[in-house]
Amino acid sequence: MKLTDKEIEFGFWNKYSREPNWLNSENSIVYSEKNLGLNVSETNRAKDLKKWISILPNLDKTEYLWTYHKVNQELFEAICQMPNLKGLNIKWSGIKNLDPLTNLTELKNLSIGSSIQITDISPLLNLPNLKTLETENFKSVKDFSVLSKMTDLIGLGLNGGMYSTLKLDNIKPIESLKNLEYLQLISTRVLDKSIDPLLNLKELKSLRLTNKWTESDFELLRQNLPNLKYGNVVPNNNAKRLMKIFERK
View 1: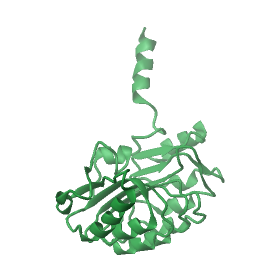
View 2: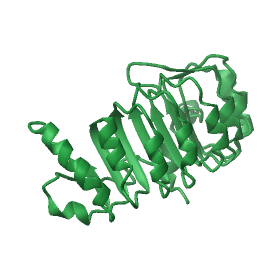
View 3: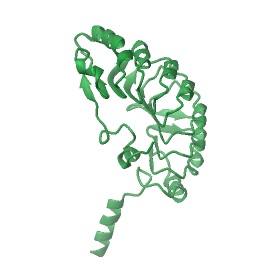
View 4: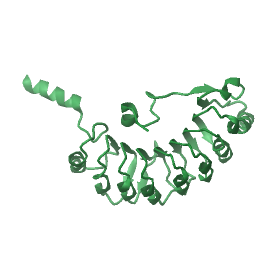
């Protein structure tokens, strides 16, 4: 799987690369839609969710699925019965158990937004084709060491929430992910304050970090990551050009 420049710079699910066709459960073309966004009725939410739960396992044409409403465990399990899903983007959820992901053997790209009830991410190891993983506010997960075994990943995001910080004891599990082309650690605090696990990720082209790191940490990353060209670690080229203009004056 080859990422585009936009996917490397902003992550696989960025708005520049792909947008779904938002459809409601009554629309017959859901059965032929490749890029599907679930449009859930606010007025008949329970009834609409029940209908989606019955429909989703039968959508064999859908390869990419987006949800912007809160996904409960039952809906998640229905999603995980979709036969040909390659990409799944969940905005936020009440998911407690990731075990149903085991059914999605073709899944290549996964994004799960704020999900504070998830405690165990080891089921991710059962996704043999996964290439990009983006998570937000997995604050109840205490053990991220399984990530060290996911060496086929080319994109990773371990992010906090809009109003909360994800605390990681360390980022040592990332050290073995030599194929990463983009990495996001946004609203994330690394308690041991060591940036060293990132220094050998030579394929990294995009790196976005919380601004809790020192400028010396950023400089160390720039010195050790020769392919880095996107993210807040890279100096702003526009700012550099402006400085040169003012210097000439």
